[in-house]
Amino acid sequence: DIQMTQSPSSLSASVGDRVIITCQASQGIDIYLNWYQQKPGKAPKLLIYDASNLQTGVPSRFSGRGSGTDFTFSITNLQPEDIATYYCQQYDTLPLTFGGGTKVEIK
Amino acid sequence: EVQLVESGGGLIQPGGSLRLSCAASGFTFSNYWLNWVRQVPGEGLVWVARINTDGSGPIYADSVKGRFTISRDNAKNTVSLQMNSLRAEDTALYYCVRGATYYYDDYPSYRDVFDLWGQGTLVTVSS
Image (cartoon, rainbow over all chains, first blue to last red; front, top):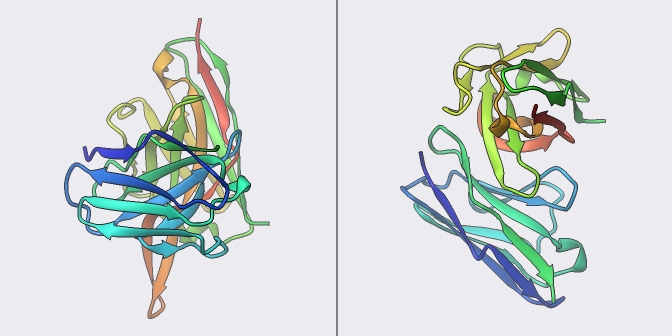
């Protein structure tokens, strides 16, 4: 199975800050990497697909980049409503696997 | 409204069986792959199973292979997960999840991009 390693596992930032989360795959996955946001008590929501494509309706302060084994997810101008846990997910190879999540809090 | 609504969760003893259902609405159900993803409260997401548009080629995580069966009824817009020989480690919130379909020159490309999630149904395996 492809292991997805996310870091950090949690972070605290101020409103307006830029937040960066990394996701590393245990083997190359091309660009088959998605990012999800999960707010407390809610189902996950797709934000980014294929490493860098913004899902329709998602604010442009969210972005992603990378290919192969190393990926980054960014939130520019962090807003209070961005408090959530963020997950990466690879779909290059079955079984589909998720990163362990990054919990984002407001400082 | 485009949505997935799960049902069927509950408390079940180890070794027991449970059938989860997911009702879809607001989109052409037969044009999408469907998945089940589970999450132990407070923990991460784990993919469980996927079924193709016509019900062929179901695929499972090793942890549930031989115990769980995914199926779908395109006439009723439903997908189900039959769970047998349940274990304590199967305790989780189970999400029904749609895989995205993209069109290139009118041909569909089915992807494991999870673009629609249900609200989840909780399964608790305990004596």
